[in-house]
Image (cartoon, rainbow, N blue to C red; front, side, top):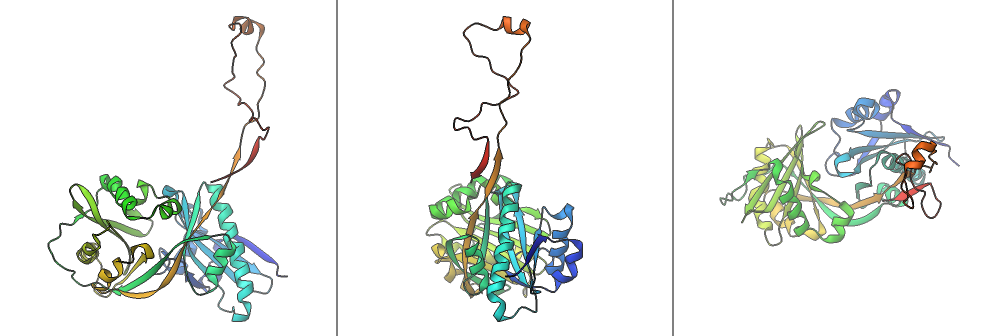
Amino acid sequence: MATLTVRPIGIRDLTGFRALQRIPLGLGDGGAPVGPMGAGVLASLPVTRRFWRGYIATASEGLRAAVEIQPEPRDYRWVIAALAAGPDSVPEQTELLVDVWEALLIAAIRAAGASGAKRLHACAPLDGPALEALLRANFTIYAYQTTLVAPGVGPGALNGTAIREQEPSDAWALQQLYQRATPQPVQFAEAFTTNHWDVGRRAAWRVRGFLVERDHQAVAYCRVTSRGHQHVVDVLAQPGEAELLRDLVPRALARSGAGEHDEVWVGVPDYHSEYISHLEAVGFSVDGRQARMVRYTAVPVRTSQARPLHLVPEVGERLSARLPSYSSTGTTPPADGVTSGTLMV
């Protein structure tokens, strides 16, 4: 039986962390802000842990592994960005590696719940041990997606579609577009609010959004998240309007500063499979398949103990007869007598 030690990444772990081989759980490099070493630095410094967190595990057999996490407090969620393993791990250790990753994920789930996050999300390749580790940690698959990649994107359809950059006041319109275009079970799993559509800077990322309007409603949307020469695109179109992506996506990338040889990624869920042909028309090609996964957390809840309030006689005499009085310094105990416990969210 392996002895396992799990702890948050610290400064002393940076050298070993850099040597680990990462499996991104998302698009591109998994959203790491400045590469594996930079992700380790962000996760190890207290002042930057609100942007990036990490946990590292060491097994008695010498196997080392880690998990990288991107907190998104505005959406009350954490995103599992990558799993990593030591370069000396061999196929014979796959079962042990899955066990170690499961322990790391459970540590991340507990930390997420303690911080107030309500759910964790991940996108895992359909082949490989990462998916098995997530399933063992009770992540649930709520959708499948096709990943596409392009070495830069062409000029687009140039059909005269009116496109404008997203403004802060557009968040509500984009939330309405999301609700019209997304199946309700997926909406329940993702639980996005208007905060999800905010743009601007997020740590080392630049986030810009572009949309097409018709009759004062958003009918197509493209968000570009950029770092250096890598860009991740999120697209959304009202049912029947997917053709607008042929013009919207290239122009959004051009206005976001994407170069001709930059790497561009996009994930298209199966319930939006009609997007794929339009994205292929502007230079994207299918790269693989992933599972979109969610895990809900448990948040510790503690209620105050009821304490009697002792009144001096003068105050007691002035209270109205036959009327109850309440103390503002205590709370009424629950009917079942339970004063502490765990609330599932």
